[in-house]
Image (cartoon, rainbow, N blue to C red; front, side, top):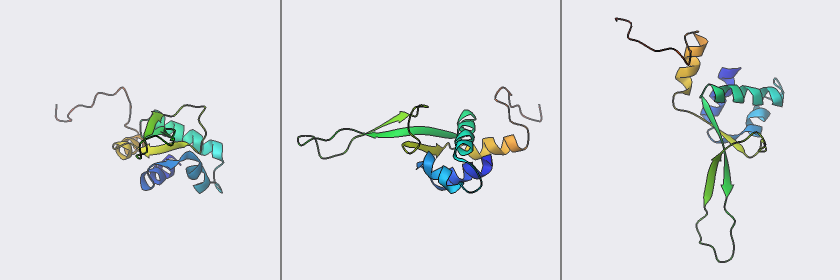
Length: 111
């Protein structure tokens, strides 16, 4: 399931958590999909963030200013966007083969 969620995030960058959950809705409940995204975030395979628009008034500049901040647990799922990190596929492949550990020092096999 982790691989399916990660491949969906890689195919559709900056998608919301709600859109990801709707894609897997017939087979997975929303809460399970959210848990899988949190597991991927703990593995540093994805990042969650929120894009906030600055308030616009009659006298503000024409360009829209967006503020990007890390997502918190209290943010709404339809506002939280998910993107894959560049090394996400490698980390997940190492996990699938059982050789991934955050405390492992990788050494050259010939030494």
